[in-house]
Image (cartoon, rainbow, N blue to C red; front, side):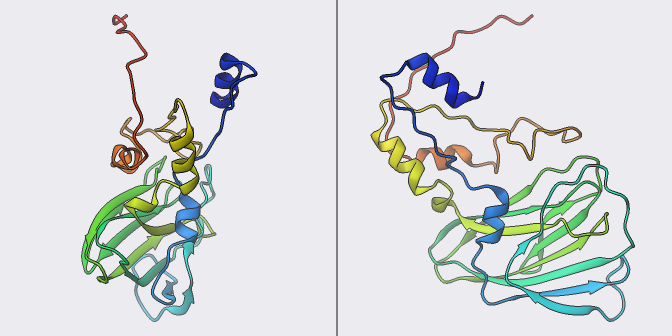
Length: 225
């Protein structure tokens, strides 16, 4: 039984239970990032970014999918270069993700902000950017795929846009709100050992942006076993 079905059963037939994901799925964030024009894509036939690359362009960096024990592919490396312009002043979430065995580094205006080394289980990595209204930054991602295909994704979103309009509407009308936060199918799986920190470091700030909700402590302290 999932959370929604459990709450509905506990409250009975006279209660209306609404569900909203609230935060965007990682792949949707990557697909919906509004870059300034196309990103430049350079592909090298080695892992050193050496020689003359094959060049192309892309409207988004959204090839991310998590692969379990993929066979190793031919050595190669890719560099993505794009420009992002902040519409409003504030904090922006930069999110990147690869698959098992992938390596990547992300720079913002020449400063490295993300570094994913080769490891068995990889969870999406994030960095927060403080940007002024109209500020433009250059994003460069260097990606070393482990498998034959591509499984890298990257995107940016303003912090106020993290919580969906639907979730805000439901919260404003509800008598009670149940929040299920932390793990999801992309981070709760075999090999993805990580801390129990909330996703993207700043989830509580996103929750605070919801309409006012009265809260109370619903559990009692449990003695350690």
